[in-house]
Every structure is written in structure tokens, then in C-alpha cells.
Length: 275
Image 1 (tube, rainbow, N blue to C red):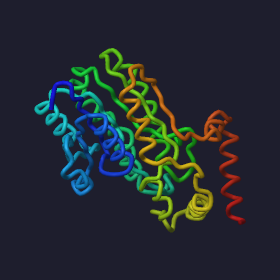
Image 2: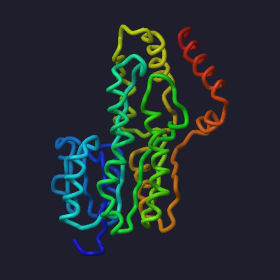
Image 3: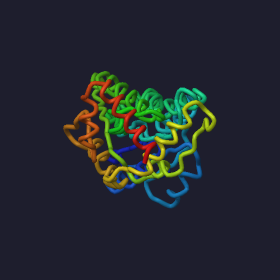
């Protein structure tokens, strides 16, 4: 590695969008530190040049600190941090074990903060970039999913980090993709109610039936979204927010009075019951 070769750390790099981002940055000449919570997810990098794989659980401060220490001892800086790690699940949020929802926030929201905090000195030294992958769906929080509010929280947290990090000459941006053809997207074909005998079992079933009958019609490939993530990491004058494949209807819904949105969602689920 030469002094001119930039270092990029990617969370959730084992598959899907994270892997596509790693491949894109490798093509751009970066040295990539690919991380994920399981070593099995990182086996696909075996034999590739300019890649280091590290097991890292973004919900564990100890795990994150270990990777930050490795970066310090090996490279002494970090040019790009891609906060991509994320999980999704479905279920009645008010009935299921709250710890399940808390864990989702630990990964999708607070994981980004842990990694930025642990790598702050490295990013400052490089005058680096931080890119947080959120979702267009933060604009609409339907029932039976904590994923969207976790991304809404990440949007707010990213705004705070961007405005703080600017004082250290570190730029932070968010990327808001629409539907991406990854395992997260495919998971809606295999939804099981974690509280099958609960009070909300019937409306939850109508909700999942609706998802199966009306999936998103526009779906990006991981490579298409990775190109936007890489642009956010590389542009000389980066924007605070980048979007790809965002639905106009979701933007409009975000502007409507919440009472209208509540009524529309409730009516839509009721209609699906009679089909």
C-alpha cells in the first residue's frame, strides 16, 4: 500500500449492497476493510487483492473498538467509512418482545454512531468521509415494521453528526435508496408473525398479504445503488443527501397530514381483507 491509496471501511460488507460497494471501491483503487458480524459472510473475499476482512458486530463497542485499533496500527488513518450494516424484520411492534425492536435499532441506528465514535481520530487525520445508508422508507412508517423508524432515527442522527463533523473537516452524507434487490428485499416473501396468537394477528396477516400482492415495481440492483454510495464517498463537493429510485408517492405521503395517512393505511388494510 502506498500513501496515496485510500482506506475504506465498510460495515455489512458480506453480501448485498455492502459487497457491491466493496467491489466498486476496489475498482476505484481503494484498500477495503470489509466487515460483517460473521466470518462465513466474508468468505467470498478470499484471494482478492487490496481487501482485509474483519469480523465486527456493530452492536458491540468492544468489537468495533478492536477494528478501529487494527486500522490505527495498520494504516494510521481512515479515508472513507460506509455505514451500511442493517437488518429488517416484521411483526406487531407493540406485542412482540421489545428487545427484538431494540436490537434492530442497535444495528440500523446506533451501530453507525459506534463506528464513527471509534474511528473519529482516524477520520480526522485523513479529513475523511462518512456515508450512512438510510432508506427512502423513513418517510412513511407503516404498522408492523420497526425498520422505517430505525432509518428515520438514523437520518436525524446523521444530520447531527454531519454538522458536528464539519468542524473537523470530515464530511458526512446519507444515501436514501428505494427498493434494492437484496436478501432484505426478498425477506418479505417469507414473513412469519413472531406473535402468532396475538391481538394483532389478523391485521398483521392482512398487512403481509398486501406486501405479497403489491411489491415495489421499481427495484434497483445493488450495483446501481453502490455507484451512488461511491459517488457520495468521492465527490469533491458532496451533498448532504443522495437519493436513488425514490418514489414520488412516498414523498407526497410524507407531506400529508398524519391523520390522513393514518386513515389511508387503515383503509388499505381493511380493503385487503375483503379481496
